[in-house]
Length: 215
Image (cartoon, one colour):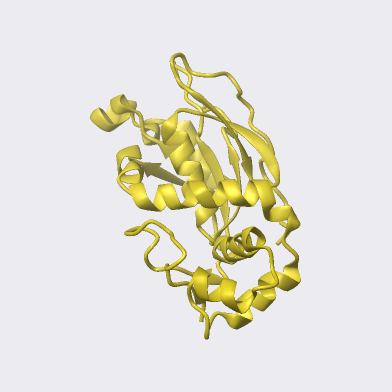
């Protein structure tokens, strides 16, 4: 799906003191991006995992009227709306005065731009350990091999899912296909929201995990 991007690249690439830099490839936006800190990496992972997210941009802008620097962590374009995502810092969680919503100029700008602010406690994301672990593995697969998976193969796998619901069963059914590309075809269907797996948040993905076509 092609959409006009309000934000296509970050406005701030300075690394916060003491934070680790993660260089990743975003399959949804088809470009490299740098993320600073584990909180940003985890949030990005869930954006890529969410089929409702069409596009996003890291650090799209800095907040106005603020004594200390504060960037918006992500702009997100969903199918029905746009969001600015703030990964709340400890001081912002502890004090209303430090909370991004306390900045009148930003609230007015966001409202006039029809962009909804979303304030996220990073701990809530970090608790989803298995979901994050599964999708980190999936995104590595998509980054490395996604371009080599023919659309026809993904379509054939989707058509076969009502009868063959695990990777083992699919490998037996598509015995002539490269098993790596077959796995990535399955991952691609999950990434696009064309297939679902209800246990990604509770079990490590394996050859016995049940995958279903989205109804």
